[in-house]
Length: 138
Image (cartoon, rainbow, N blue to C red):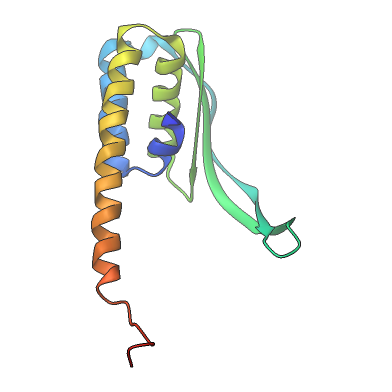
């Protein structure tokens, strides 16, 4: 399971709820900020399907955070400007890397979140499918 991708695609409120769960377990004195939330650019690489070659389509704005939670490294990166979400992902990342009962609880909650996101995507795809035009019938 790629929990990082699930968190990056989740609403900020859900990520913050999981991060609050981590903060209830570890006191703030156990959190060391290695680099505060900062914006940067990453290259968007795309595969061209005819020649099967890769090219750089442009740059994307991201917000990234690096921290340590009880001496365990954590990293968070999100598209756009969202310092809280990046910080939450970094906390969750460090807690999962640390292992233990909290990590297992977080993995279970992230799995449930993934199922909710999948269900919502299917619902939206069904709504869009209703608007599909069949030109062969016309």
